[in-house]
Length: 238
Length: 238
DNA sequence: CGATGCGTTGATAACTTTCAAATTTAGTGG
DNA sequence: CCACTAAATTTGAAAGTTATCAACGCATCG
Image 1: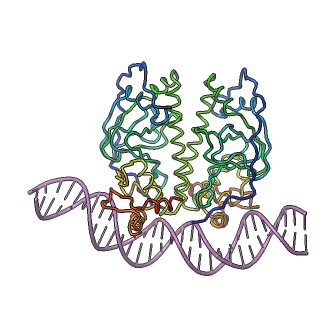
Image 2: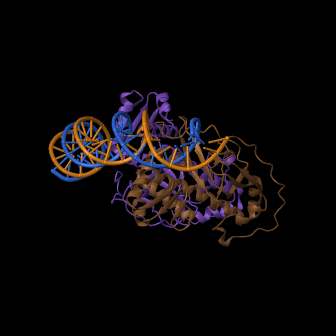
Image 3: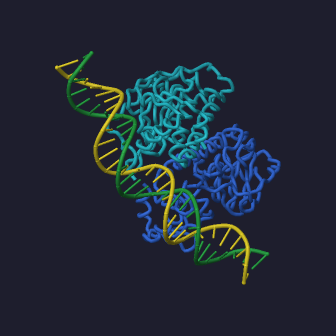
């Protein structure tokens, strides 16, 4: 079953950046209840921003997880390549999202920039050291990890649905995250979507066309989708 | 697509048990590096053991997550029921496994005893209080949570495979966990397996039959499976 | 012994993938 | 800015996989 993309050979490895000398942070802004944007402000004080061109690798599976990352602009995909060459995308990270959080010493997924992206890179040791002194930071890490777990569990639920349901769920998810009214800007290709949903690009494309025929959505350009009938999509979001 | 089991009506709700008054624990046994069995011994000192008959609900989705649980004997499934009545099993927990760990205040999955089971039940607040005083406990919680995340990510990878691959992976997973040579004792029904793998019972059954025809396994009884050709299964475990 | 639940097997239908080709979009050099 | 090539997306037809519907076998339990 060689349905999904093989790893593109055009990604290239970048050396891990030197961290800007992380001055001890005396205070950090607490977000309300620390839930909306955990670690949000603290991170900016101790990281360096890096630019990654489209398709550049940010970190690779099995590399030591020395940093954690926050998307400043652009977008990122994490993925895993199966033995047979298929690629499974674990998730998409948009502006403001934090990724690369690990429990173990090595990354379990790889990460690439989907579009040109600016990424805030923070030494993991700096965060964990801070977390030891500051319960709010520790809790922030916990909350973020909980989100990752939820996301993975949602992903499981997604993958047992029909193609129509998967695509509808995906669109609703992206609409909720981008939250620009009913218009969805997709930074990722059809292949990325397919590899996230466990489908082929042809099925994704056909499903979008059929949703368009059913007047549930409009697809003015391949990277922009307008939700016309949200309840129709919700109905499919079983 | 109404492929999976609807919630069985024969499960029944049990009231949450009173915790035995948790005497402050002066010391707790550290497992080597705290990794093999995180929180292992500490838990036994502060929880109460409860018996659940087959198919009894241990906790329900959306109930407050006040306890965490450890399987003493028997086995447990966690699951979620989708809007349309399908049931997706999140995982199986065997003797020694800890489950019910949550980030939020409510459970995101329900849990039921697959077989008659003895479960150690510990107040979550007792553990977290302990974790605040003891870094090893805190780390144990972290490790366990990391395992949950890994498991969910593995589950995602499982669900994008073919039926044969899913069943083969499942068997290898169970073989690795039960680790009684090549013989696998399955506590769960075909329906449970199907709902875990995102397949129908018919497909699971047929796949087992076909693996047996291919001399990869033997199925002496429906709940026991003997691995005859592990490399054949590994080959399918793409 | 008959009812009941669980598992297997068979035939057919539905869905998704595969393979192929057409079409649109994006990027490049003149 | 246009022409041209490469890449991405869409569409079509056929094949493959899994689900659905139905029947049967087998064991357990009153």
